Amino acid sequence: MTQVSVRTGTSRAGGASSARYPSFASYVEARQPVLLRTARSLTPNPNDAEDLLQTALAKTYVAWPRIEDHRALDGYVRRALVNTRTSQWRKRKVDEFACEELPEPEVLPAVDPAEAQSLRDAMWRAIMKLPNRQRAMVVLRYYEDLSEAQTAAILGVSVGTVKSAVSRALGKLRADPELTAAR
Image 1 (cartoon, rainbow, N blue to C red):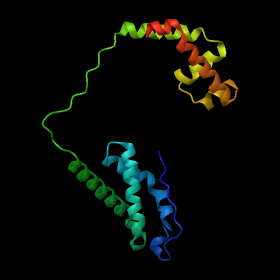
Image 2 (image 1 turned 45 degrees about the vertical axis):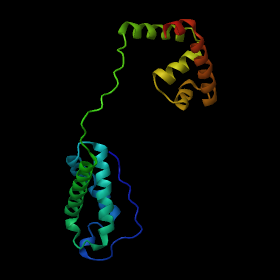
Image 3 (image 1 turned 180 degrees about the vertical axis):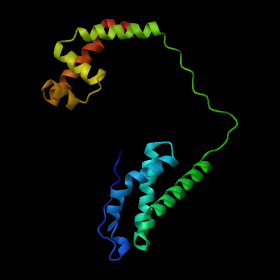
Image 4 (image 1 turned 30 degrees about the vertical axis):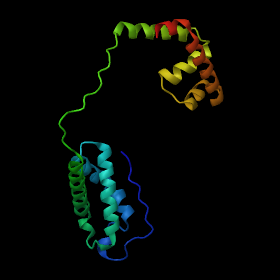
């Protein structure tokens, strides 16, 4: 769960109602999981729900000094969530336009599975021709999708070593005649 970041320099002064949540930050810290569940019920995408909650909390922060009864904070934020979601929904409706013809994607020729497998086999044969160290770096970088830093840490070498060895290995793969013929 992503935490909503809140920074405030002031807190509400005095009053029995402010004892429960002396500051906006304490309110957000205490109620964020519940409010995030409410936001997730309003939108199917979890990332949109987090954005929705962030927007509603920003509106609540602006109104914080005017809120008299802190027992009603959840209701205030829920109303801000619903109103913000309704506004987003209405704006999105305006952005959509009907057209006479639907744009069709360009049809790409189907890839023959036998040719694809042949290319994969040729690639592995070319990778197996590489020296052990270069082969390990290429596999970690491109098959395991690790970063250069992660690859360097696993192999116990510097990032520069990974960069140069992978560059040399890719050069050898590009020059491999079996791979050139398979492409």
